[in-house]
Image (tube, rainbow, N blue to C red; front, side, top):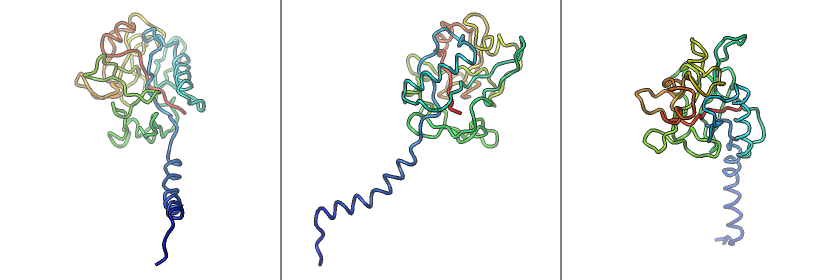
Length: 221
């Protein structure tokens, strides 16, 4: 019987393993979705959609993702010469991956359950911030699962005044309210990731006081 030398055996093992390693490298996906690790710090006054998008971009770059265009998952309502903007129309077509390379949704339809329910992975385990960390949810201290969206469950602008659904289209840190979702899909009898309940007000204090921190979702288009 022909003996296999140790170097030959090692080479054989490495060659056999190479396709699996290569396949894993090919499957690794860059981050294209995250929850902001920090808010702007001024309640729901995000500087409008432009300011929110810039915050997404800055956090992504700090995390080492320098390619792509980032959009905040936020809707705005019509008024004062502005047309309504739907969050779902701002974020591209997908698919989107978290900081660990795990897919959170394959398409806009999957993200919002347009055809099939529960086709996304926005929950405490997979809805990570840009650092790859889980966001505090129900039962954690402090709870920060309230995520600003201004949207209904299908990602569209809500009917009503901007002051009561989007904190004056993300320019108010005082009176008013905004629709928020629960990133962990838990608490308050509503498990929606994007349309759980209105905020108490638009102030930083009230956002923190009800289980939030002025955080929002960011998607790469």
